[in-house]
Length: 116
Length: 171
Image (tube, rainbow over all chains, first blue to last red):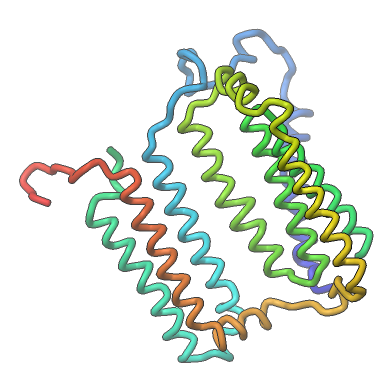
């Protein structure tokens, strides 16, 4: 029973997505033609292949996401025992976050978050 | 729970093998994601729900994104598949395969010796992990933040292309 809500959320997610797909399948008229079946790219005709070299800047945002994802992983257990660990836990987590915030502010000031 | 453990382990082993042997990088990545999800299920059956959740959030979520970005950046196409075939001829599998088999055999031997190797009867819940993290291991948590800081700054310098020049401001 401990994981009842996890099951409930999983079920609801599946029902929600399935219902959307099923409704559009039942309601939408089916008259395909080559133009309709072509990939939609903001209404523009496709130019070249999808194998193009992407800007390395995307990787920075991937790495930043990973750093803050791992940081959030430390926040979940803290939230569970927030009342038990009290002020000590708050100071410990504050230090933890401060180190990363200083890093983020440094990178920000240096212009790392700007798209070039 | 035992049956779930064995099935999830089988899926993990199979998908890992497929992830290694696929020539198309994106296909290998898809198998890697399934492998990580299977390992998460293995952790769950072993009584570690937090690690199972983190396996999904951090590994199948964040780290696989980095892999996908590398695939996008390196612009792999048909040429890469041919290159892969050249780099990995059939014979290249022999030595690592033999060593892996040896390790697998040793693992089975050890598991046979130790009878109580699967602690399924004790679930280590999030509270217990948290109490350890903010008790005896608090210094490790703080050091982890410094490690993450190194990742943050390292990521920034990886794509750094010299100081940005803005009009009317000096950096």
